[in-house]
Image (cartoon, rainbow, N blue to C red; front, side, top):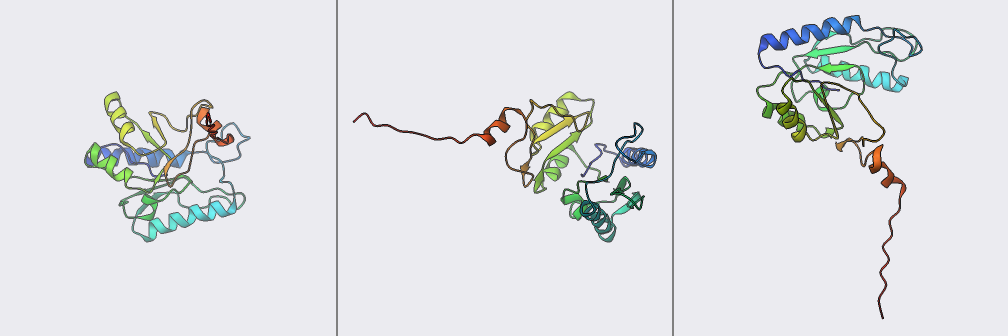
Length: 194
């Protein structure tokens, strides 16, 4: 996932990134059966290698690795929470869906710049927005080309609410009444009065 801290000044950006790094260093990784676990392993060796490959690409393309980027345990498919700074829009870690514990911290100039850069991706599964300004939240949510926008939360689901992405992030929707269309086959029958 690519997270873009919604801050405008260099000082604000640096403070947010420093807080994220501090938090990432404290995250407890482990088995999901343990109550104190905050992040579990990835689903397979293949996915672990894919995420570690993205991390290597980030470093090789010039992003600054601030924390993580490693395989913390020999067993299972863990990747340590990873945060990059000095990421630009042309880097692989900014353009592709990683599906692992990787954050690319990128400042922005203004809200319209932020929206344009986010929409420049060929993907559009989900986005998270943190703000105290409800009007700004609605404006961003309306203009982002993503299937889900979470405001001041993340990874919240309800079986009655459809989930799915835009662009290359999927076709159709899971959950909600929209998902029922995947299980129907429509037929039109026309009968002449003659």
